[in-house]
Each structure stands twice: as structure tokens, then as C-alpha cells.
Image 1 (tube, one colour):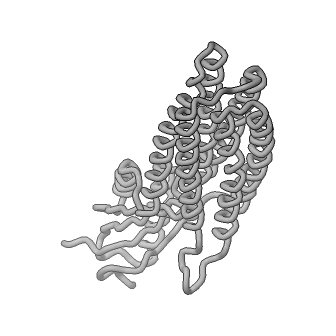
Image 2 (cartoon, rainbow, N blue to C red):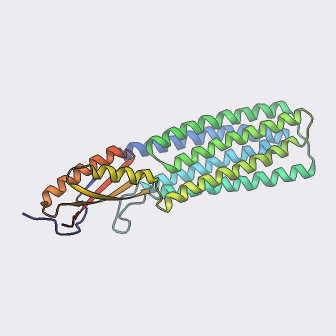
Length: 305
């Protein structure tokens, strides 16, 4: 009978979830969102040029830039589909996270543009025409972005995609940007010419705030950061399995895949075949404790006598 005499290669791994179906959901969400944002942005752009509202113009260009952002996200999903190889043994799933960086860059670029335009109009003391049309366009911007944000957030959470969730936050930001443009136009309607550019500056500050949050979230994943509760739950679940005297867990995200590696200390007299079965039980237990885990790998170690 073969026995465990020291460190062994991982004995078992469980992969959960229908990756192909989730990728289709992600691609559909990106495509539908891009169409919605393009329509919303074009309406705002036409009205902004007609009214001369710099706040509405910045919001329109921001929405239209999201169409290019959606293309970046779509490209990330397409690249991440490529299978693992000798050169890339874990596949190219991190392409989704890199696409998230593209989303962050668009957010920061939008902040810079909105800030420059707002300062220019404030210093030039320029006026705004056809306020009613501008207000209607801003309301359309709010509604369009809210619908897109909620849709992408729901799909992103369902398939555990940090990139799609970040893109949803971006669309939610656009809704607040439209709200800022709306408040500025209302102030102008009340006789305050400075209302439009000041609202634009306030929106710029909020764009910077959300940009920082999105950048931090994506950076956290790229640096293999995980919620400490994931580690705690995985170790507790593994340790509760009869036959495991102690467990140590490590975890990392690669795109939408949460991988958990469990080092478990077992009886040195345990047969290799039994250790393999034990590893399968551990993997199931860990997956039940951490449902978002897609890959659970167990590696047995001989416990000291």
C-alpha cells in the first residue's frame, strides 16, 4: 500500500460553473449596453450643440466614450476565451482584468475633459440657450445610464466578472454626471449663468472618485488580492473534514475565476488512493463554504507524528 511520505502534487481539483454560457451573457450585456449608450449619447450630443451647454456636452461625450470602452471590454472577454497552453498554463483569463484597466483609463480621461471644459466656460462666462431641451436631454441621459448600469451590474455579479462590474459602475457614474448636468441647467433656468460650469466641476470631482474606486478594484485583483473571509472560510471548511488535522489556504482571481489552493495535513499512514478521495471531499466542502470558487485544489502533506 502506497503511503504519503511528504509533499505531493495536488490530488484533486473541482471546476464549477458553465464558462461558455457566462461568456455569452457577458458579450450580450456588453453589446446591448453599447447600443443603449450610443443612442443616449447621440441624443445628448445633438441637444448640447444646439443649446451650448458644456455640462451636457461633456456628459454626451462621456457616454459616447463608453461605446469604445465596451469595445475594450468585449476584446478582453474574447482574448480570455483562449485555452491554456504551455506558455500560458492558466490561460488568458487575466485579459478581462486588463480590459478593466482600459475602463479605468476612460474614466480618468473623461474627468480631465469634463474639468477643462467646465473651467473654460466658467472663466468665459458663456451663456446657455434652449434650457428646456437641455433639461429633457439630461433626463434621458439619467434614465438611459441607470438602465444600462443596472443591467451590467446584475450580469456582472451573476458571472463574477470584475470588469463588467467596473463597467457598470462607470455607467452609474454617467447617470450621476447627467444628474449634475441637469442641476446646472436648472440653475441656469433660475438665472444663474454659472450653474452649468459649476455643476460640471462637481461632476468632474465625482468622476475622479469613482475612477479611483474602479482603479483600486482592478488593481486589487491584478495583485492577487482577495477578501480575507475567503481564506478563513476555505480553511475552516477544509479543517472540518474528518482526516484533515490542519489546513492552510491560498486564493487568487484570474479574470472571473477564483482559484483556491488547500494544503492539508493528514495521517502519514494514509494510502494515496484514500488521500485522493479525501481531497475530493475537501474540495466539495470548500466549494460549499465559498460558492464563488471555480477551482479548488487540494494538496496533502504528511502530518508530523
